[in-house]
Amino acid sequence: MVGDQHAAGSRMEGSTEHLSPNREGMSGVAHFLEHHFRHFNAAALIDAAKGYVSHLEDGGRMMVTLAGAMSTAELGLSLAEMIRAGHVHAIACTGANLEEDVFNLVAHDHYVRIPKYRDLTVADEQALLERHLNRVTDTCIPEEEAIRRIEDVVLRAWMEADQSGERLFPHEFLYRILLDGSLAHHYQIDPADSWLLAAAEKNLPIIVPGWEDSTLGNIYAAHCMQGDIANVHTVRSGIEYMMWLADWYTDVSRDHKVGFFQIGGGIAGDFPICVVPMLEQDLLRQTRKWAYFCQISDSTTSFGSYSGAVPNEKITWGKLDESSESHVIESDATIVAPLIFAWVLERSV
Image (cartoon, rainbow, N blue to C red; front, side):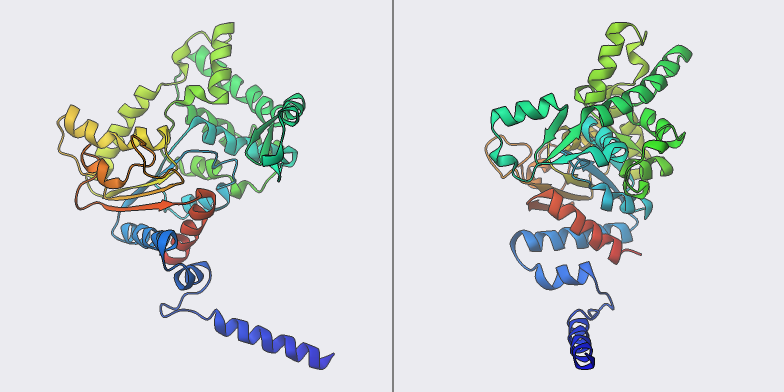
């Protein structure tokens, strides 16, 4: 027994030596990545992570954009910590990502994972529907426990604002119901792992273009049609988001370089990046271009593919310029983003 303990201790010592701090006195995920991620998309990940840290160290500000189903992929496990650490200064996201972080917060125990989702037949999919399970790749969101639970609470907030003549952005309504504790008794994960709650606690700027196509956007439209909400403009619009973003970017870029960390493609990235050419070409304001750009996408470059467009193309649209640092990582964001966030958290002061 003593011999076995000694042998185990020897192996442990050997393992510790192998993972000893690197030349910067660091260990952990960042050291592992630096040692193993040397070429191709792996090297692009390292370059992007180092650029993110350098951008912050230079006093830069960073916008993170969320497309796809990042909230259902539980990106909050790492993104919430990035927000609390002050490494994210604004977020642009789809309406789905906005609401699905809250769905996960209040209904996580009722989610159903489908590991072999590629094998599902149409009959299997119909059976999921009949169980009120809405599938997102390998994960099903439970309608009653998630969507309807949120609906009751947010509807009260919408109606109160409508009756008082108050108008708020979509994310501000969710901030309100998170911060007033209306949902706290429903929490089924550690609230520290909710990126939206972390954002609410810091009153982080959020832009939600195209909110109308989200589940809550559809529900809001239905309640307007039913007469529960008299003024459809109680929830502020995408045009107002762009106007707000223009003022925010003008104020922040006056003293800081602003970076753009894009996860996926689509409207979450397309909408906010356009604020720079809008300011410069339509408002005729001298405006700093985005100083840092990184896109994680599995959409490869092809004819007319905006999501797969290389950063250089954005120069012709007045979004980036020759001096903008840019990176493209053609990979799965559910793998890449948490690794980059871990690097930034370990290497940033």
